[in-house]
Image (cartoon, rainbow, N blue to C red):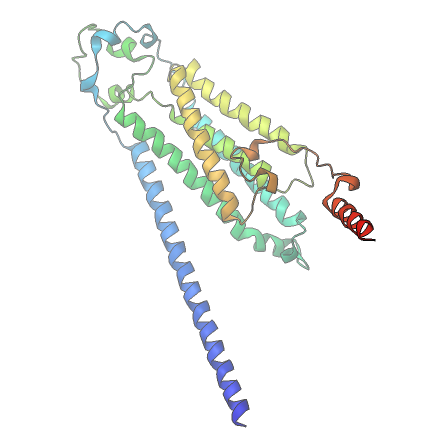
Length: 319
């Protein structure tokens, strides 16, 4: 009786220990979730504040004598601004593509945790994964917006129409009232729209190659890849044809968005507890690769066959 009672006491203490550890793990998870949510809210708030706030670049550092000799600053200011429509497109199209991909994953995936579930149960089971993906997409978009606007404020880079509008006294400095439009004309580098377009489109490409289930529609991946890349380039070219940004501004915005998209796409793999293929572990651009068919090594050159040959040779030599 004493042995059984001591055994039951040990089991009880062990259960208390593991239950206490599970409770502490849940507490840590809630704390981590709270910190992540707070960080996302702060990043979003700062990005929106920089985008909507009327900040003034250092206009006093402008060298008007050099500016007046720059013929690229005498372009005509366009009256047709398609910025709002382009922002809606580059945000809505990747968002819808990710949503369709997650619905496809929930309904067609053969994961073990989807067994014996109907369609609605599968969608509910996949909801946390969808939220994680959209959270990464939103935070990455806010980081791209924040980075572009912060550089704009730090660097007073005139837009192509700057001297056409404010260079009437060249080579003397502008002596009129410096309104918000004046300071907005000094925010050319880098292109904000190109930066956001580069991030959203390349992030969608990364999602299509490494996160989305490709078994049902494998040909859709290269088609959507080409479509998103064309969308990013087309959106950026509008800023050049409308004389809002220079070529260097557009390229810098695309490059900044590309770097952020590569980082966030690879980070998304860890968040979803996914890993690249073993032969691509050290390739940072692996999600941009096209799917290449895998060919198995012939049996005559396999490791098992080579080991068997070595063993047989040793046995024959011993005999």
